[in-house]
Image (cartoon, rainbow, N blue to C red; front, top):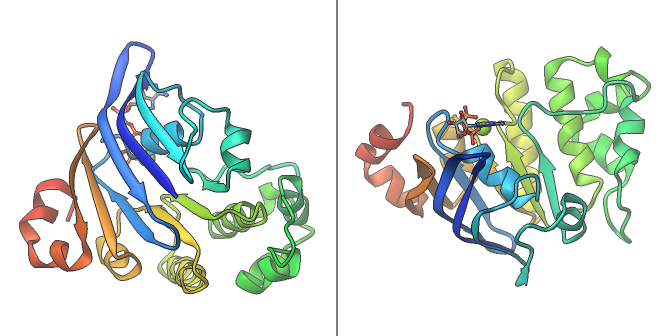
Length: 230
Ligand SMILES: Nc1ncnc2c1ncn2[C@@H]1O[C@H](COP(=O)(O)OP(=O)(O)OP(=O)(O)O)[C@@H](O)[C@H]1O
Ligand SMILES: [Mg+2]
């Protein structure tokens, strides 16, 4: 689905990613973990064409998309739920959902999105500014789903939310996984990540420091201590 290889990337003169690598297969749930400022969001921005790589390759479904514009990456089948949600504040919930929708036969519809997040149906006429943090996050996820992605990419989708709302987001992600959607998740909640995904990548100082399965990560607690905030 996605193959990132030997990716160098940064901001102006400041290099952040050094030969970063990451791979997600169709239907697979993969996490990208690492401490603050290690380059998780930067990796995702590069994947979505929001930052120009200095070196390396990004392939989507086998096609070279290195440096491709964001709309082309989206059209290739990637859906982005960015850090900080970034919903359209002056549009209603429903307008947010249709603004970037890319309908597909048998694909996502408003009623399916409202089925996943019933709160959004109740709030369909409210402006983005009128939503709680949790509702904004649900909207950001539903908006990405309305583009009918083959890979959904979530950056800190549970950050700063109340436990009950977090649980709701995790169960929605689990439902999407059960549907066979490929998902790449960045989050700080190690236990939730171990439950949701079969494969994990750890980034440290802009480099891929470790990758492996849930069983391998569970078996070696020193890994979590070395690379994560636990
Ligand atoms: N717009 C920017 N301009 C310059 N440097 C940036 C910019 N955004 C991020 N950085 C730097 O790049 C590095 C990686 O940041 P990034 O946001 O990718 O980390 P992260 O792993 O997502 O962290 P967090 O867990 O806090 O979200 C950090 O040192 C950060 O200060
Ligand atoms: Mg980040």
